[in-house]
Length: 107
Length: 114
View (tube, chains in turn yellow, orange):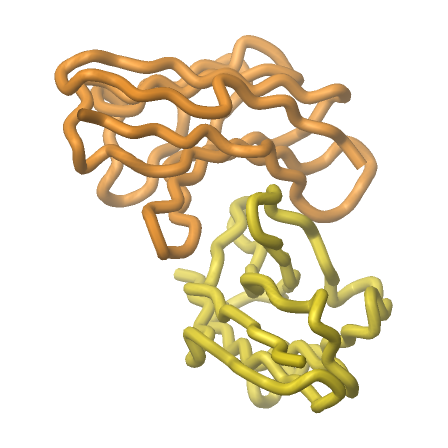
């Protein structure tokens, strides 16, 4: 079975501070991992996928197979980054989500 | 990436009744899924909607309660049957495939059962 764990329900930082949202996974095969973001009153949006190794809105995430992690990072948080962030794993032909972390960036 | 239109966006229903939610994708997708997001919680996969055959349900979800149809590669419906207040939730559909990576989501249906 596949599982995604996001240990923090809430992460509160000040504007300009670094951010790291943790994600660990459990999967027997080769994982395909994603970060999704849900801003207030908006639909779920894809933020990052690990195979693209891209940076979106200043966020990056590196897959660490040894630690089975896919943490989301941003060096300098902005107030507009405040949202719910979900880590997700695609495997066995389905997408499974973690419980989500609410990021709150204060001025 | 594909765009998914989902309707209704919200509804308030009486207990014991049923509601059918529709999802239309603007391009063919290989896989379609239905999720539930209960208040303050993450997304839980209900089932995979298979084109031309019965849906594949996750543990805890059954066809009698959540019948699903997928007559073609761009359309699917989820029915929430014999509703109770515990079914109050946001229901989302998702599509994957068709030459792009990642999963796209509909805007969700906010269901309140009274």
